[in-house]
Image (cartoon, rainbow, N blue to C red; front, side, top):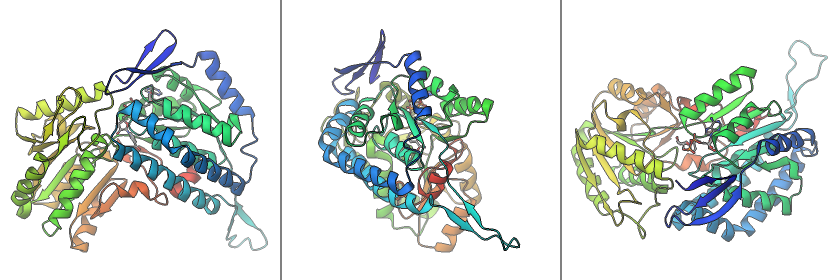
Length: 450
Ligand code: NAD
């Protein structure tokens, strides 16, 4: 746990010290409907022009940058992350706001379309706000995920009711304070505090016009069913396995560094963390020997190289996956100075087809490695879990890469790189299959919010 419920309060705990950081009141049923209703009836934000909204988001971004130390401290206290991971989160969030604000001005402006045979007619597309967006977010990036989803919905002219994770609500509360102080438009950006029950009330509320959910596939399925009852649109950003493919002609050093960065940064608690490596047969032995040497030198712990496990239930799941793999295959681990709080960097070699690590999202600093020789077998194995969020491929033969990429049912593929696509706000982001539906980011994301 990084938080606990007590009476009508949410007690937020520091994941490292387990000490209470703050006790905050949970949003009660009456407050939830009142806040959503206020948001529904206040159209002052939606009536602004797109450039008008963009200029206020620019001002909001400046205010966030001004308050970056406070943001850094709050993220640190409620997640226990190392400074490097927090800096990346703040930097990519600010960069995203900068890019997406520019994109919105073009993507959402009135578009003239060809009227074809109707030569005397003028045809336009106008991107109107949907109304109130219910944004529900997880705990692994308490700044980036709620902020980016909320700002995209706001740029499209919607009012936002945000429910951050019960484990990391303090960063979102700070965002709300900064918004109110520098921007005003209080009903345009509202926060509700609580767990699944509050999330469910947002989804079911008739005044919510779209749900933007980021979280687990299991909860995403529940939300999809609830939205289906009233055909409410929803964007679902869910879990993934995020395979990395390393071809015989790849730059092995670059692939190893990328695999380690992709799997260990943020303690492996990133939806697009690399969780499985598929290494082509000719380089397999060399690759495994080199990455094994490297991982043994990486440390987890209070002064370690990557962040702690943020919530204990997730740490238990990751350890379950490692223990389950131990039964059938070889495991190579780096160091940890406190195995109760930190999970050592872990390589799992040739896991059993039925093992948990092959079939479920792990969400920790663990990387499985499997050899492949046929492309058909590779693609079949990658698609086995049904996840399809992101992936990466390393190699030099462009034709071969292209052939494999075409067969992948996956939202994003990075070529000779990893994770960085999330930092490019102009490309749509989202998964296929069990990794979700709909897109955020880019003009595609902004238009799906209007
Ligand atoms: P989670 O699904 O348990 O919770 C996410 C949010 O949903 C929380 O705010 C929670 O309170 C709320 N919630 C829970 N039950 C609900 C219900 N029935 N109705 C409405 N809301 C409900 O996920 P988590 O453990 O917080 O986050 C980890 C998961 O999120 C991982 O699977 C990870 O891959 C995924 N994730 C995906 C992305 C992406 O962009 N695809 C990004 C970050 C995290």
